[in-house]
Amino acid sequence: MTRLLDSFWRAVMYCLHPRVIGLSILPVIVMGALSLALGYFYWESALTAVRRSLESYELVNAMSHWLEGVGLGSLHLVLAPALVLFLAIPIIVIATLLFVAFFMTPSMVALVARRRFPQLERKKGGSLGGSMARSLGSTLLAALALLVSVPLWLVPPLILILPPLIWGWLTYRVMSYDTLADHASPQERQQVFSENRLPLLGIGVLSGYLGAAPSLLWASGAMFVAMAPVLVPVAIWIYTLVFAFSSLWFAHYCLAALEQVRKQNTALAQAASAHNAIDSIANSPMPATLPAPVTGPASSVGRPASTP
Image (cartoon, rainbow, N blue to C red):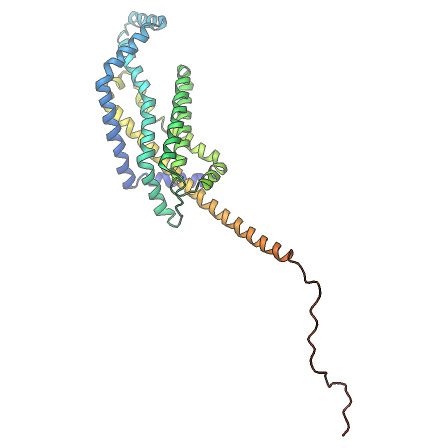
Protein backbone atom coordinates (compact mmCIF):
# COMPACT_ATOMS: atom_id res chain seq x y z
CA MET A 1 0.00 0.00 0.00
CA THR A 2 2.89 2.36 0.78
CA ARG A 3 4.38 1.82 -2.66
CA LEU A 4 0.95 2.32 -4.26
CA LEU A 5 0.38 5.69 -2.57
CA ASP A 6 3.98 6.80 -3.09
CA SER A 7 3.81 6.07 -6.81
CA PHE A 8 0.42 7.84 -7.02
CA TRP A 9 1.71 11.13 -5.60
CA ARG A 10 4.87 10.95 -7.67
CA ALA A 11 2.76 10.48 -10.82
CA VAL A 12 0.64 13.50 -9.88
CA MET A 13 3.74 15.68 -9.52
CA TYR A 14 5.28 14.39 -12.76
CA CYS A 15 2.13 15.42 -14.65
CA LEU A 16 3.25 19.02 -14.05
CA HIS A 17 6.57 18.39 -15.76
CA PRO A 18 6.92 20.46 -18.96
CA ARG A 19 7.93 17.39 -20.97
CA VAL A 20 4.77 15.52 -19.98
CA ILE A 21 2.58 18.54 -20.76
CA GLY A 22 4.27 18.91 -24.14
CA LEU A 23 3.81 15.22 -24.95
CA SER A 24 0.09 15.41 -24.09
CA ILE A 25 -0.52 17.94 -26.85
CA LEU A 26 0.48 15.61 -29.69
CA PRO A 27 -2.35 13.07 -29.21
CA VAL A 28 -4.87 15.92 -29.06
CA ILE A 29 -3.69 17.25 -32.41
CA VAL A 30 -3.54 13.86 -34.12
CA MET A 31 -6.67 12.30 -32.61
CA GLY A 32 -8.67 15.53 -32.85
CA ALA A 33 -7.82 15.98 -36.52
CA LEU A 34 -8.57 12.31 -37.23
CA SER A 35 -11.93 12.46 -35.41
CA LEU A 36 -13.00 15.63 -37.19
CA ALA A 37 -11.93 14.20 -40.57
CA LEU A 38 -13.88 11.00 -40.02
CA GLY A 39 -16.88 13.03 -38.87
CA TYR A 40 -16.68 15.22 -41.97
CA PHE A 41 -16.65 12.28 -44.38
CA TYR A 42 -18.88 9.73 -42.59
CA TRP A 43 -21.19 11.73 -40.32
CA GLU A 44 -24.19 11.77 -42.65
CA SER A 45 -23.93 8.11 -43.59
CA ALA A 46 -23.64 7.14 -39.92
CA LEU A 47 -26.70 9.24 -39.05
CA THR A 48 -28.69 7.60 -41.85
CA ALA A 49 -27.76 4.11 -40.68
CA VAL A 50 -28.67 4.87 -37.06
CA ARG A 51 -31.99 6.48 -38.01
CA ARG A 52 -32.94 3.44 -40.09
CA SER A 53 -32.09 1.16 -37.18
CA LEU A 54 -34.15 3.27 -34.76
CA GLU A 55 -37.16 3.33 -37.08
CA SER A 56 -37.28 -0.46 -36.97
CA TYR A 57 -38.02 -0.40 -33.22
CA GLU A 58 -41.66 0.17 -32.28
CA LEU A 59 -40.67 1.38 -28.83
CA VAL A 60 -38.58 4.19 -30.30
CA ASN A 61 -41.43 5.22 -32.62
CA ALA A 62 -43.87 5.26 -29.73
CA MET A 63 -41.46 7.37 -27.71
CA SER A 64 -41.10 9.81 -30.60
CA HIS A 65 -44.87 10.23 -30.90
CA TRP A 66 -45.12 10.77 -27.15
CA LEU A 67 -42.40 13.45 -27.24
CA GLU A 68 -44.22 15.22 -30.08
CA GLY A 69 -47.45 15.04 -28.10
CA VAL A 70 -45.95 16.79 -25.07
CA GLY A 71 -44.24 19.42 -27.20
CA LEU A 72 -40.73 17.95 -27.00
CA GLY A 73 -40.49 16.67 -30.55
CA SER A 74 -37.16 18.44 -31.03
CA LEU A 75 -35.52 15.91 -28.69
CA HIS A 76 -36.22 13.22 -31.25
CA LEU A 77 -34.03 15.07 -33.74
CA VAL A 78 -30.93 14.81 -31.54
CA LEU A 79 -31.41 11.13 -30.66
CA ALA A 80 -29.55 9.74 -33.67
CA PRO A 81 -26.61 12.21 -33.48
CA ALA A 82 -26.28 11.53 -29.74
CA LEU A 83 -26.21 7.77 -30.35
CA VAL A 84 -23.54 8.14 -33.03
CA LEU A 85 -21.38 10.15 -30.64
CA PHE A 86 -21.97 7.69 -27.78
CA LEU A 87 -20.95 4.80 -30.03
CA ALA A 88 -17.83 6.70 -31.06
CA ILE A 89 -16.72 7.30 -27.46
CA PRO A 90 -15.30 3.77 -26.85
CA ILE A 91 -13.38 3.96 -30.11
CA ILE A 92 -11.93 7.36 -29.14
CA VAL A 93 -10.97 6.07 -25.68
CA ILE A 94 -9.24 2.93 -26.98
CA ALA A 95 -7.45 4.81 -29.76
CA THR A 96 -6.23 7.45 -27.30
CA LEU A 97 -5.00 4.78 -24.88
CA LEU A 98 -3.03 2.99 -27.61
CA PHE A 99 -1.62 6.29 -28.86
CA VAL A 100 -0.40 7.17 -25.37
CA ALA A 101 1.00 3.67 -24.84
CA PHE A 102 3.00 3.62 -28.08
CA PHE A 103 4.17 7.22 -28.34
CA MET A 104 4.15 8.71 -24.83
CA THR A 105 4.84 5.86 -22.42
CA PRO A 106 8.45 5.13 -23.56
CA SER A 107 9.41 8.79 -23.10
CA MET A 108 7.73 9.03 -19.69
CA VAL A 109 9.28 5.76 -18.49
CA ALA A 110 12.69 7.06 -19.58
CA LEU A 111 12.00 10.30 -17.67
CA VAL A 112 11.10 8.41 -14.48
CA ALA A 113 14.08 6.07 -14.81
CA ARG A 114 16.53 8.91 -15.42
CA ARG A 115 15.33 11.02 -12.51
CA ARG A 116 14.52 8.33 -9.91
CA PHE A 117 16.22 5.06 -10.95
CA PRO A 118 19.46 6.06 -12.70
CA GLN A 119 21.28 2.89 -11.53
CA LEU A 120 18.58 0.47 -12.67
CA GLU A 121 20.01 -1.80 -15.38
CA ARG A 122 18.15 -2.04 -18.68
CA LYS A 123 17.83 -5.70 -19.66
CA LYS A 124 15.46 -5.01 -22.58
CA GLY A 125 13.28 -8.06 -22.00
CA GLY A 126 10.39 -6.63 -24.03
CA SER A 127 10.02 -5.79 -27.68
CA LEU A 128 7.87 -3.68 -29.95
CA GLY A 129 6.34 -6.82 -31.42
CA GLY A 130 5.47 -8.17 -27.97
CA SER A 131 3.97 -4.83 -26.97
CA MET A 132 1.86 -4.66 -30.12
CA ALA A 133 0.69 -8.26 -29.78
CA ARG A 134 -0.30 -7.78 -26.14
CA SER A 135 -1.96 -4.42 -26.84
CA LEU A 136 -3.92 -5.59 -29.89
CA GLY A 137 -5.01 -8.83 -28.22
CA SER A 138 -6.17 -7.02 -25.10
CA THR A 139 -7.89 -4.36 -27.23
CA LEU A 140 -9.88 -6.98 -29.12
CA LEU A 141 -11.01 -8.58 -25.85
CA ALA A 142 -11.94 -5.17 -24.41
CA ALA A 143 -13.87 -4.23 -27.57
CA LEU A 144 -15.75 -7.53 -27.43
CA ALA A 145 -16.58 -6.95 -23.76
CA LEU A 146 -17.84 -3.44 -24.57
CA LEU A 147 -20.07 -4.74 -27.38
CA VAL A 148 -21.51 -7.49 -25.20
CA SER A 149 -22.19 -5.06 -22.35
CA VAL A 150 -23.89 -2.37 -24.48
CA PRO A 151 -27.45 -3.57 -23.65
CA LEU A 152 -26.59 -3.30 -19.95
CA TRP A 153 -25.72 0.38 -20.38
CA LEU A 154 -29.46 1.11 -20.46
CA VAL A 155 -29.52 0.33 -16.73
CA PRO A 156 -28.47 3.68 -15.19
CA PRO A 157 -25.91 2.44 -12.61
CA LEU A 158 -24.21 0.00 -14.96
CA ILE A 159 -23.21 2.57 -17.56
CA LEU A 160 -21.09 4.20 -14.85
CA ILE A 161 -19.54 0.88 -13.77
CA LEU A 162 -18.98 -1.45 -16.72
CA PRO A 163 -17.12 0.79 -19.24
CA PRO A 164 -14.62 2.12 -16.65
CA LEU A 165 -13.94 -1.44 -15.48
CA ILE A 166 -13.26 -2.59 -19.03
CA TRP A 167 -11.07 0.44 -19.79
CA GLY A 168 -9.23 -0.12 -16.50
CA TRP A 169 -8.49 -3.74 -17.34
CA LEU A 170 -7.24 -2.70 -20.78
CA THR A 171 -5.06 0.03 -19.22
CA TYR A 172 -3.57 -2.52 -16.82
CA ARG A 173 -2.78 -4.96 -19.62
CA VAL A 174 -1.18 -2.39 -21.90
CA MET A 175 0.67 -0.13 -19.45
CA SER A 176 2.11 -2.83 -17.19
CA TYR A 177 3.95 -4.44 -20.10
CA ASP A 178 5.17 -1.24 -21.71
CA THR A 179 6.59 0.25 -18.51
CA LEU A 180 8.80 -2.83 -17.95
CA ALA A 181 9.66 -3.60 -21.57
CA ASP A 182 12.97 -1.72 -21.52
CA HIS A 183 14.28 -2.51 -18.02
CA ALA A 184 13.10 -5.99 -16.99
CA SER A 185 14.02 -9.39 -18.33
CA PRO A 186 11.12 -11.72 -19.21
CA GLN A 187 11.62 -13.63 -15.95
CA GLU A 188 11.71 -10.44 -13.89
CA ARG A 189 8.62 -9.10 -15.66
CA GLN A 190 6.66 -12.24 -14.86
CA GLN A 191 7.86 -12.09 -11.24
CA VAL A 192 6.76 -8.46 -10.89
CA PHE A 193 3.36 -9.32 -12.40
CA SER A 194 2.82 -12.36 -10.17
CA GLU A 195 3.82 -10.53 -6.97
CA ASN A 196 1.92 -7.30 -7.75
CA ARG A 197 -1.07 -8.41 -9.81
CA LEU A 198 -3.78 -6.94 -7.56
CA PRO A 199 -2.08 -3.52 -7.07
CA LEU A 200 -1.43 -3.25 -10.81
CA LEU A 201 -5.03 -4.17 -11.62
CA GLY A 202 -6.16 -1.63 -9.01
CA ILE A 203 -4.11 1.10 -10.71
CA GLY A 204 -5.71 0.20 -14.03
CA VAL A 205 -9.26 0.21 -12.66
CA LEU A 206 -8.77 3.52 -10.83
CA SER A 207 -7.35 5.00 -14.03
CA GLY A 208 -10.41 3.70 -15.88
CA TYR A 209 -12.72 5.51 -13.47
CA LEU A 210 -10.64 8.67 -13.82
CA GLY A 211 -11.15 8.28 -17.55
CA ALA A 212 -14.89 8.51 -16.97
CA ALA A 213 -14.46 12.22 -16.20
CA PRO A 214 -15.25 13.29 -19.79
CA SER A 215 -18.66 11.68 -19.29
CA LEU A 216 -19.65 15.01 -17.77
CA LEU A 217 -19.31 16.45 -21.27
CA TRP A 218 -21.56 13.77 -22.75
CA ALA A 219 -24.18 14.48 -20.05
CA SER A 220 -24.85 17.87 -21.62
CA GLY A 221 -27.15 16.11 -24.08
CA ALA A 222 -28.30 18.24 -26.99
CA MET A 223 -25.73 20.91 -26.12
CA PHE A 224 -22.98 18.33 -26.60
CA VAL A 225 -24.30 17.43 -30.04
CA ALA A 226 -24.28 21.09 -31.07
CA MET A 227 -20.79 21.71 -29.67
CA ALA A 228 -19.24 18.37 -30.66
CA PRO A 229 -16.49 19.92 -32.87
CA VAL A 230 -15.21 21.76 -29.79
CA LEU A 231 -15.98 19.27 -27.05
CA VAL A 232 -14.51 16.21 -28.80
CA PRO A 233 -10.94 17.63 -28.85
CA VAL A 234 -11.40 18.73 -25.22
CA ALA A 235 -12.49 15.21 -24.28
CA ILE A 236 -9.53 13.71 -26.15
CA TRP A 237 -7.18 16.01 -24.23
CA ILE A 238 -8.73 14.92 -20.91
CA TYR A 239 -8.41 11.26 -21.91
CA THR A 240 -4.78 11.90 -22.88
CA LEU A 241 -3.97 13.46 -19.52
CA VAL A 242 -5.67 10.62 -17.66
CA PHE A 243 -3.78 7.94 -19.59
CA ALA A 244 -0.52 9.90 -19.28
CA PHE A 245 -1.06 10.01 -15.52
CA SER A 246 -1.80 6.28 -15.44
CA SER A 247 1.34 5.63 -17.49
CA LEU A 248 3.41 7.60 -14.95
CA TRP A 249 1.69 5.78 -12.10
CA PHE A 250 2.54 2.41 -13.65
CA ALA A 251 6.11 3.55 -14.36
CA HIS A 252 6.80 4.62 -10.77
CA TYR A 253 5.18 1.52 -9.30
CA CYS A 254 6.63 -1.05 -11.71
CA LEU A 255 10.20 0.29 -11.65
CA ALA A 256 10.15 0.43 -7.85
CA ALA A 257 8.81 -3.14 -7.76
CA LEU A 258 11.50 -4.22 -10.24
CA GLU A 259 14.21 -2.66 -8.07
CA GLN A 260 12.85 -4.51 -5.03
CA VAL A 261 12.69 -7.79 -6.96
CA ARG A 262 16.32 -7.47 -7.98
CA LYS A 263 17.38 -6.78 -4.39
CA GLN A 264 15.47 -9.83 -3.22
CA ASN A 265 16.93 -12.02 -5.95
CA THR A 266 20.46 -10.80 -5.17
CA ALA A 267 19.99 -11.51 -1.47
CA LEU A 268 18.60 -14.97 -2.22
CA ALA A 269 21.48 -15.70 -4.60
CA GLN A 270 24.05 -14.65 -1.99
CA ALA A 271 22.35 -16.73 0.71
CA ALA A 272 22.21 -19.74 -1.62
CA SER A 273 25.90 -19.30 -2.49
CA ALA A 274 26.87 -19.12 1.19
CA HIS A 275 24.71 -22.17 1.97
CA ASN A 276 26.32 -24.14 -0.85
CA ALA A 277 29.79 -23.19 0.38
CA ILE A 278 28.95 -24.41 3.90
CA ASP A 279 27.51 -27.64 2.50
CA SER A 280 30.59 -28.27 0.39
CA ILE A 281 32.84 -27.86 3.42
CA ALA A 282 30.61 -30.02 5.61
CA ASN A 283 30.34 -32.77 2.99
CA SER A 284 34.03 -32.86 2.03
CA PRO A 285 35.64 -36.28 2.87
CA MET A 286 37.84 -36.48 5.98
CA PRO A 287 41.35 -38.01 5.64
CA ALA A 288 41.54 -41.76 6.49
CA THR A 289 44.57 -41.51 8.81
CA LEU A 290 46.15 -38.68 10.67
CA PRO A 291 49.54 -37.64 9.38
CA ALA A 292 52.55 -39.02 11.37
CA PRO A 293 54.12 -36.54 13.75
CA VAL A 294 57.35 -34.97 12.65
CA THR A 295 60.28 -36.45 14.61
CA GLY A 296 63.39 -34.51 15.35
CA PRO A 297 66.55 -35.08 17.41
CA ALA A 298 65.95 -36.52 20.83
CA SER A 299 65.55 -33.91 23.49
CA SER A 300 68.21 -33.75 26.13
CA VAL A 301 65.76 -32.76 28.79
CA GLY A 302 65.72 -35.35 31.54
CA ARG A 303 68.70 -37.25 30.06
CA PRO A 304 71.62 -37.83 32.47
CA ALA A 305 74.67 -35.88 31.64
CA SER A 306 77.43 -37.95 30.01
CA THR A 307 80.61 -38.44 31.94
CA PRO A 308 83.90 -37.61 30.42
